[in-house]
Structure formats: structure tokens, C-alpha cells
Length: 352
Image (cartoon, rainbow, N blue to C red):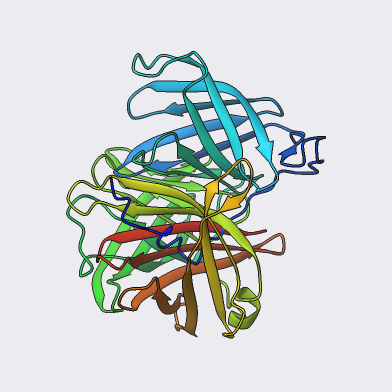
């Protein structure tokens, strides 16, 4: 367990994401919100490389690990914090009890993104994109990696993809960088096609799950981690730093690729401009926050549209990199950084 004082340790100041459903109404319990209308489908990845699909109705959730063939289903409750709690009542996983004690929290941004925090501190976060019907266009897309076992700060951390399309065949010109901003690899991937919300190629483990909004998640195959990103946009840094966010922080054990998932939030910093003050939740259901926090200060926007900055979690300052985009007027942030102990972490989030 990585629990290091983590004052929610990094709750990554960036705690960002949010995810409210559509047209939710407050229940008589001020912490509970009525479920939204509609049925939404999502596809994505869980480090170190399991592919997932999820469907959410107004009352029910079902998630399937496509890599293992295991599924998990049950009802859920929506809370005012923006998080939802799923209680597993059906599964073909013999290790999961069906007596109401198996739970998971998730954040849903309908038609864009789903983030699932499995029960237990050490269950790896699952990040999914809404299933797109229309094939994605050519253009530049930015991304951050979700580290794998053995990852170090000198490995690929983030990058850009120039996407070209010809007669339905996709070519990806990928440039990756380490956290210091040094170019590490240039790769050309060709021959991918789009079907059922994903870009894939026969015989290649890489899958890219696209959303109608341009946000996407990728799965590089078992043991190889994943990535998340969005279509390139020029971002107003000061505006992005003036918003409130909710989301999750995942801190990795660099030896195994497993780690700890935390529910987090962030608000404009009270004294610094272009900065966020982050916090974690002691109790997702009541919205109770932990004491302490972190500061995430934005720096310049790089030429490729990636934002850089510094994170102060009480230890040595560390750099972060984030891919930022606006979807339906809300900022979505996907980032990578090191904590005070030098371990990698992702924050995956959305404006409240």
C-alpha cells in the first residue's frame, strides 16, 4: 500500500474531474442526487493494460474486463460530491462477494468520459471514453501516459500524435517525451481502422477508444500501460486555473505498476495566480475533506499544446505535464507527475 501520509498527497492539486450526470436533482438527503436519464456506453483501459467496457443506465451499471472476461454489475447511488457508488450484485468473478460489500466509486461525464475507482486503496483506476459513432478526424492529439511496471521518469511520459486518414485507414505519427521535456521516441503506426468506437489493427495490441468530443483513452496491451488525451486546443492558462475540479489521483508503485487511487478535488489557489489548491476526500459520500493539501502552479503552454508546471506537496517541488481541452464548455485535464517520493502518478479530471 502506498499510503504515505499522502495527505492525499498529491491529491494532486489537480484533482480535477468532476463528472456530474445530466440534469441531476438533489434528494431529501443533501448528499444524495437522483440518477440522470439516458443510457451511456464507455470503453477504456486499466493499468497495466486491461481493456474494459461499461454501460450505465439511470439505475444500473455493468462493467466487463475484456482482457479477463470478468464482469461486474449492480445498482448505484449518486452523491453531491459528483461521485457515484456502485454496489456489485452480479459477477462471474469468484473472488467478489455478492452480499453488498463489494463496491466501486465512479465519475461520469456523460458522452465523454468515465473514471472508475474500484473498492480498496490498491485497485488500479479504470479510465474510459464514451463510445463514438463517428470516426475521428485527422489532426493533432495530445496525451499523457499511464505508467507501467518498471517505469522511470526518463521513460515516455507524454506526447503528441499527428493523425492522418486516407480511405478509412489511419496513420499515427507519434512523438513522445519524458517528464523533463526531452524527446524520447518518434514512432509511425499505420493501418488502423475505426469500428464500434475504437481504432484498432489486426495483430496489434494497441487500441484507441474515441469519444464524440475528441477525448480519447488508449490501451497498449497487457503489461504495457495505457494513455489518455484529447484533440489539441490552445488553452487560456489563467482561465483553467480559475475553475473548480473533481476527479481521481492514481499513485503507482514503480516496481509493480499497481498503486493507490484517491478521490480528489481542486480549487483556485487563495493567494497564487494560475494555480490550484488540491485536497482529497476522507469520505466520498458525505464530501468530508482531509486536512492538508497540495499546490499546483501552472507554467507556460508548450508549443505542442501541453501545459507544464510545478507541484508542491510538502516535499521537493516536482514538474508535471498535462493535456487540457474544453468539452461542452468544461475543462478536462489529464496529467502525469512524480510525488515527493519520486513515484509516478496520474490525475484524470474535469471541471465541476
